[in-house]
Length: 402
Image 1 (tube, rainbow, N blue to C red):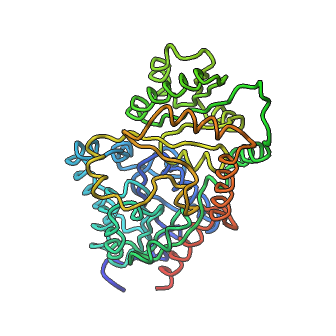
Image 2 (spheres, rainbow, N blue to C red; image 1 turned 90 degrees about the vertical axis):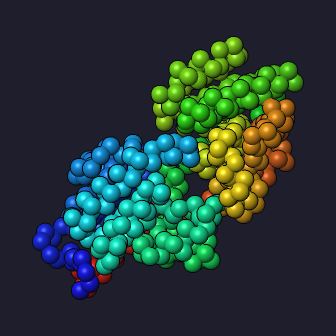
Image 3 (cartoon, rainbow, N blue to C red; image 1 turned 90 degrees about the horizontal axis):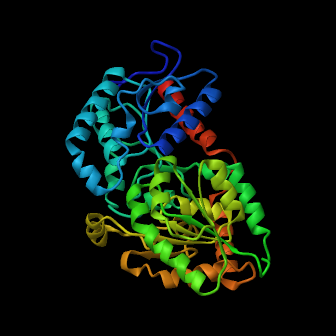
């Protein structure tokens, strides 16, 4: 047995799982995986590491508030570097002391992979699993081969990632599926939108606005969206506008749209968002995961983004991907038009939105055909959490017989 090794048969019969999940989405993924693993093993596993409410409900006592590592944007990360360095050391030392049966790191890769690297150095026989592949297909591809020294398996949520990892010389990567494909509300939206073949000429265009989930995104995009709305009105389009947002952004959004048409409906909550998806003719959206939601809901969309100035300068040198829209990358062709920074022209957005809103128009038909390709390529034969749990269970079984 190698240095630092521990088998699941030692001590308690219940496996001890190390976990690191910072962002809310990552915590939900991790919780679904642990729940499926508990079902598969027939006993609840024990948890040690970092995570929030979804994982605490499954028995985790987090080492610290995971919001400390759920940072977005290079500027935010740079400012937090001293604190992150301390938290990396704290997390690694706690996991080394606990000697779990395997370590699962989910998001915040600049944090979690540093933790994995330190833990693997001290516990070389510990299996390390990365749930959600780092975006090596978008930038810093050298991360893929570098991961091999401290990551044994990658569980990917995008169908093109195993081939990219193999090409770059990264760890063994398994596509387990994306949780959005199992979302029943999105499926209902798809059924409604895919069946739409006509719109009453007198009916307003149901325009969906999604300016982002961060204050900086809302601040940078709502003026562009407002000018687009105005141009569409000048061109004779009657509009019914929905703007779903997050509770902590609602006041900022309402203040920003003062003076817009009275038909703007600002809502919060998942149910209201799904209702907006189901009735939308077209969406203007901030670049991000929401584009994949829109694709799976069958809402034709245009993607926009204004980058942090520092991020923009770095991106110009380091980005290697041909598109930032996940539906485009999955379909391997342009499905959603993207506009960034100075290329965002409200007049262009207005005309694109008008064309995409026409259920019988060729532009909308092409987008919907692209969305069908996305759905076909993402489809798996069981829930992602179950596929992921099967791989983790096999890793644990390998440990118990080692």
